Length: 259
Ligand code: COA
Image (spheres, rainbow, N blue to C red):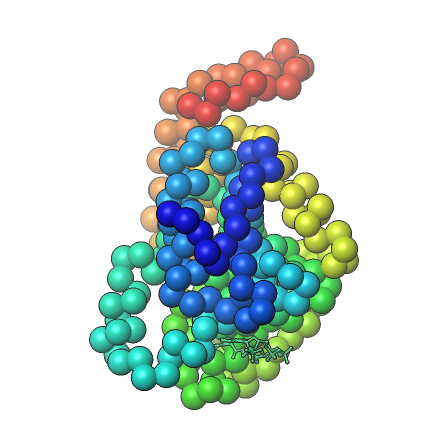
């Protein structure tokens, strides 16, 4: 697929997806969503890609939301069909490798929902986050009403969704919507540092760890604990487990095989 609205960059084991509609503050139209989903499909198959970073081109925006212009005249059936199985939010949510959202500016509506479907959110100190859908007479439709309360609690999520207010990065960090805030000029370096650190671990252990943590959002505690035990048992089948233990005993860095 020839990409028109994204750029795909490789930095060693880290793949960076740049959302590339800066003149529209990277608002997500159907084409952009399709391209990101396609790129993730390719990166899932690519064993050399260990961690994905998603960010926006330009200095102003991560994503200023779904492309509002596509809402005009859209019917309920159009919208229902657009969700389908390939809805970008689902693709990101189910992606087996870690995805870090590098939030370089406005992170609004569908942009905030995209970031919340990612695993870790690093924000520039210039970032502003929010769910402003209410201001145009609609509601979040990319998971905002479900993921936001899980991250920040019911009251704060309700306040953000019902007022449509934007909050600065420091406030987003305080309530748990961002996991770190860094000076704008250091955002890329600090995010890549984190991504590279994760990419250097055993890829099979990283996948299983991610699956276990994700399960905590979807399962009751007793089932989640049992699921963790299953994955913990599965990890004992890997060569990387033997290598990790041996490397510890021999006081040397482990050489991961990814199996
Ligand atoms: N969908 C489509 N286009 C968008 C957009 C969106 N969600 N957000 C911004 N744009 C476009 C603007 O229409 C403008 O295009 P134009 O130059 O062709 O007129 C361009 O991006 C720049 O935006 P502008 O509003 O001029 O920038 P600003 O710095 O004055 O304001 C925002 C920035 C983010 C406050 C403002 O663009 C905004 O409120 N955007 C909508 C946010 C939103 O409601 N998102 C949720 C949608 S469900």
